[in-house]
Length: 443
Image 1 (tube, rainbow, N blue to C red):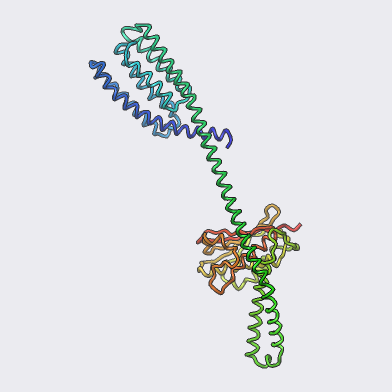
Image 2: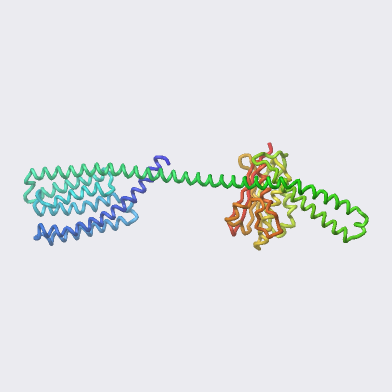
């Protein structure tokens, strides 16, 4: 935070602080002014009626200032409104001094009390406090001069004057150091808030890093498991396919339609297993962080291919796109097509399962910092918050049993990672889901 920002923030907080204290101080002043009738009764019972009326009038005037402190302009002019209601009791006390014993009037103590209170309790500025102290002294001097006995005895007047001026000076010193203490406290609060904000950012980054590390560990673990099984599964599948091919060439198979149909079904089943093994190979032998060794290709053509290959799944879905003129990227075109097919298929299935009205998929493509950023968004049911962190986990799926292994997004994640990018899921549950990734530009 810059010095100007810090000072502006402090001034704003100080304005609120002054406003709250001014209101509280004004209520206290009204109470003290009215309670002063006890002093009037004890010292000058013959003046009780006149002094009582004066106290009521001053209390009403202070109440009027309090009303102004609650107005829109009250916050802006709070220091001067505070000075106004503080001077009202001082004027009343000065009048009482002139009506009683002048220089030797006990009401002189009230002037001192107000000066000390303004410096210690109220958040005044230095100059405002000095002005208040000087005005209080001038009021005392005027009251003594207006008294029928003048400023006699002079010695008492000098002593009282010095005490008032000392009180004003001391009050100014209190104000100066109180102001510095308040500013230092505000600065400490601002620094603590800034450090807390930085810690929150660091904590969020640590959570992200922890999630990425956990994802890598899961991928590595399942990859190690898959690598160990591939050889054992692939060899018998190849033997079975060879046996089926040989059997299909036999005359008995060609002469028996039912037998030929069974062999075709068996062959398709074995080929399906081959596809699963191929997907597992892509996942098991990936190189995290390594860039893909590919060739330049137009992403636009890859997008067209993926839409054609998923045309049967995208029936009834409005597919739109937004592309730049140049979409030449470097990479494995077939693997990228596989990623797009997976994203389109997942979106179509989720929208169909949720019964989305007017289902649509929009693909946005744009260049940013020498990489092509792709975003595929649908208007389907979205992804639940508890699932969005798990969508790239191997074998995690929300589909019904038998409708998928839950490897599609894991493999897609690995493909994009090999291109030096990252596949990221986003969602507003109940409204939309989106996946975005980036590919390198072909130099």
